[in-house]
Amino acid sequence: MIVGNDVALMLIKDTKISFTADFSEKGRRISVFAFGGDADGVSERGLKYLLDAVTIKQEFPIGVSNEFTGEAAEVEVQRGMLLLCIEGDRQEENT
Image (cartoon, rainbow, N blue to C red):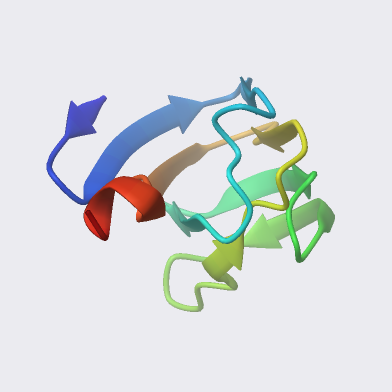
């Protein structure tokens, strides 16, 4: 994982990653991109916009600017790699 002031970048391959409710602050944005080719079996649960076992193509990103809801969430890819871009803590940015 690469962490900057306003964003964290993470690569996942053929796996699932879970986010706790504490981390999943309502309104925090997450974007998910296919990386190194198409990603099959992509599911996003606990986010504002849900995906259920879809294929995300590199040339047509459909996982841009989703939002956490304040509940536990997870992103899964059954085959392929995803780049996750997660915005920093909105409250800390405003102080």
